[in-house]
Image 1 (tube, rainbow, N blue to C red):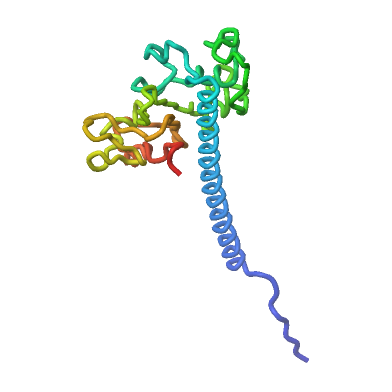
Image 2 (cartoon, rainbow, N blue to C red; image 1 turned 60 degrees about the vertical axis):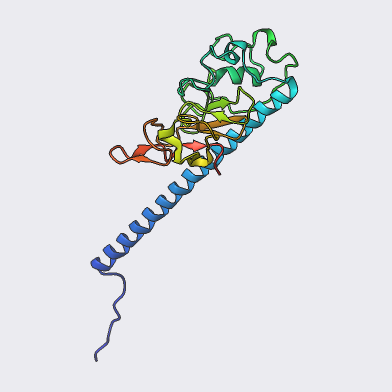
Length: 239
């Protein structure tokens, strides 16, 4: 008497195929999560920039002047980027906006005895980082983005609604066609050269995920050799 047995289970080849498919799916999921996390970081960084700008504007509305020392307003101090070096920091703004007389590392600020914020108001609320180079406001008073880059802030010291940043004002970075610039920047009629700016009182940006900004590349360009450049810079004025 003959009986037949149905084959059950997987052969070795079939098992390997299943494992390969699972590996591919896992890879796609991880990649997708990575992309989603990257976009979420950019979105959160832009939100932080928006809050920073609101804090600066609120301070100006309260006191009738910008949260800057006279040294900066006269063009002599390094904490603001209005034609100066774009790698300087934002500590002076933080001291005024958060009413800090000393940073957590013990360094005294320009807000001596609350002189820059006599009402002792806190205009900005931000995460306190446990070390320098970490996201948030570090012990040194520098406010950094989620990749550890300092937020770069430029203000319109001339109050003419044409805010200039030390890097993005450059024609080789921002020029697109005549007075029209990349990333919504523009150069007013009659001006030539490195005069591309934003129709705003404040510009805030950061180096982004690659932690690099190159003043010799266009605003939308990536260095093909290093695969890094300005294309991933996070700009607070661009949606």
